[in-house]
Image 1 (cartoon, rainbow, N blue to C red):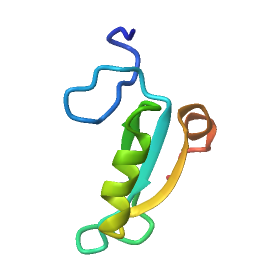
Image 2: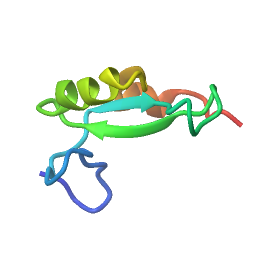
Image 3: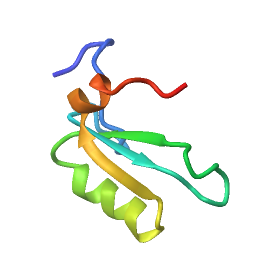
Image 4: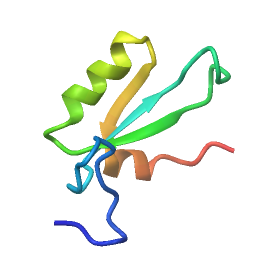
Length: 74
C-alpha cells in the first residue's frame, strides 16, 4: 500500500511502493554523466531493467534507500 508521499513503481499501471531505483541514460539525448531514474517494485525490477538494458541505457540498479543516501551531485 502507498500514500501520496510514497514513491511508486514506474511500471505502467502499477501503484506499488518502489523499492529500487534504475538509473539510466540515453546517450543520444543526455550527457554521459546525466542520470534519469525509474522506480521499481520487486515485481517489476527485472522487466524494467531488461527494457532499459536491451537499449543500452541502464547504468545502475540500487535500492531506493541507497539512492536516497547518496550525496546529491551538483
